[in-house]
Amino acid sequence: MQKKKLITHNGSFHTDDVFACAAFMLLLDRKGDQYEVVRTREEKLIEEGDYVFDVGGIYDEAKNRFDHHQRGGAGKRANGIEYASFGLVWKKFGKELCESNKAADIVEKKLVSPVDAHDNGLDLVENKHEVSPYLIQHAFLATEATWREGLINDEMFQKSVSIAKEILSREIIQAKDLLLAEEAVVENYKSSPDKRVIVLDRNYPYDILGTFPEPLFVIYFKESSNNWHIKAVRENPKIFKNRKNFPSAWAGLRDEELQETTKVADAVFCHRGLFLAVAKSKEGAVKLAQITVEF
Image (cartoon, rainbow, N blue to C red; front, top):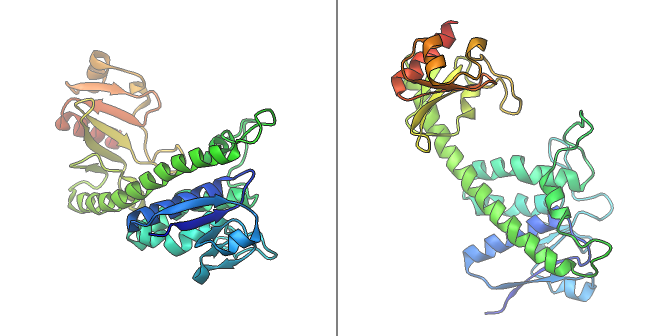
């Protein structure tokens, strides 16, 4: 079987070409195709590529050419974020890799768009504290050769792609399982007698509850601690502001102190941030939530 040729540029590398390469590897692994990665800027080698990304000056999805450096770029999303090579590859193959448009869209918003935005010089976050967030782009930047290390970028590119391949694979799994969880959480919500306190039968991700007006707390069993956890539903999953906090008098209390204060016999802990409380039983957890709802 002739190996497929994945062509990208040599020299320094960035997060978009690292993830674009990882996406192709996952795709070809699934198909059972053999492949090799060639890092070059030689036009003759580029023309021979089966998949060409972040090099070549052409965006032509039908011909599997995915560059965005040409005059005029390669287009923008509806939200204004320009496409980089990762986004162009994902635009064509994301659904195939995720086996659904919904899962592909989750990965697009969570990982692909931010990578493309950074590659095109667009800041998505505001620096408020003279300390910048450490993004995935910085992790891959750390793998590049420094001025003292010499020409080791080919080796480091391969290592970076291996890491990106694992991350992308996990994000696909996370997205697919999130969609299944959302279905279950919505069913729990619909069947809940008090829609301010939602008791889940599994430890599902539950951000979907924020799309409904009533939920204030969610309760679930956590196997690692063998306890029932009660967590506040946030006003927005991207910010640390709860729809309702636990009472401030509970902050940081444990065991006997919390039990005496709440009159819940198996209360275990309340986080000083007032977003989490713990009880040994489901009944205890529900009681803590109900007290807070009526507080």
